[in-house]
Length: 275
Image 1 (cartoon, rainbow, N blue to C red):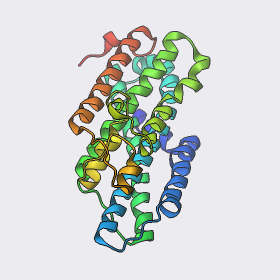
Image 2: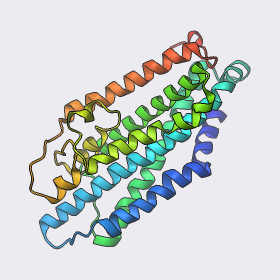
Image 3: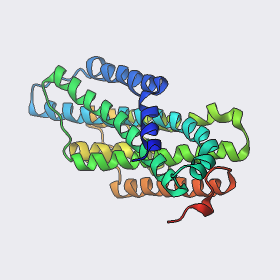
Image 4: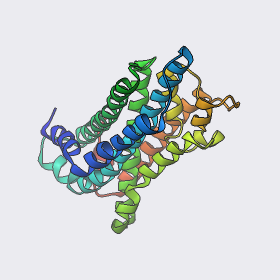
């Protein structure tokens, strides 16, 4: 681990704005979700199952919002780092490939730490209210989902930062950087709205289905999660295979766009990266 990787992680984890929006703001909604909106008595076996599903939905959707908030900071970070990338790779022992790998790893570690914080707080506060320790049905599957979400958000942030640089619209950085959070809120809207097959097209939208499935073992709907949880009305089940394909496709698209924009930017030259 080089000094750059350590500083990257430290910068993201100690940034007051990131801590405020990704932890403080989301923790407020964790408390509201559990203690205000979730008035479910854990009296019968069915109610306990509903409570566990509700908890899984909480860490799925709120964790995704936290990760999306981190991606806002990542866009800023990548934008300003790109200006110094040429000097870092030329005058230090960090080569272009190592620079990109460590920037990616540092960002991914930070994203996962923020998501894990929300994850733990949801489970902990749920135990305080209901006395139920709602651990995921498939912890490894949840971890994989979070990693895939982090990778997709990193390359989305990279694409947005480079798009601002290449287009020379630096004044649009603030507006552009909020695109990941906007997408996160679109995914969050699935709690009330059934987006249908659009969840396989809109980035991040398939992740709640995957997280809910691995968290509970139940096949989630394509949207309207609250209706699915509290009503006997029939809802359309999400195609988990298509959801997984959609996430991988988003990663491939964002990575490809980043490499194309990287060639046109003045950051780390693509031709200097040796695999």
